[in-house]
Amino acid sequence: MSDDHVSAVVHWTHRRGGDAHCLVRLYPRRDRVVAVASEIRSNEDSSGIADDMAGVAAKALDLAREHLDAEPHDVTWLAHHGPFSYYDAFDPDTFTLVPLDWDGRRYHDNLENHRLLTGQQVYDLLDSRTLEPVPTALASLGWSY
Image: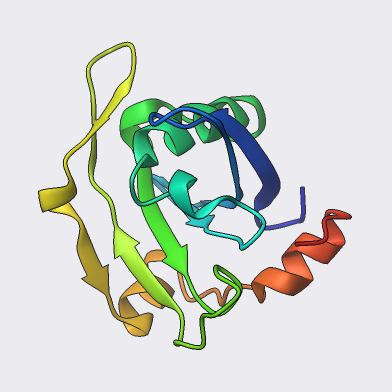
């Protein structure tokens, strides 16, 4: 955990089966936690985060509860993709707001509710913080992707 956020590579069983993993960074704000889940290229293409944000969120929620005392309905979920996500990717970073519904036991996702955000919107959500580059964040965790 750094001074202003919690970072970890989380592992879960993807809804399509098989192991999956991604980088998760949790940023506490005044009334919320902003969770940024970054797809990393060492994760199998068939186990992408955009297709199982509820699975990502279930594992990341454990981290948010342990370190930030966060409740499920107090977390804003973002999916993050960029050149670090796929071996053949050269596109700039993209951020997708993923509104997840909490039923009291688990999260539910509806792909129709996903919405792309601008860099400024992400900056504002993070209370004017800038994200550390994914390769740097992974290296600080001792992770090679």
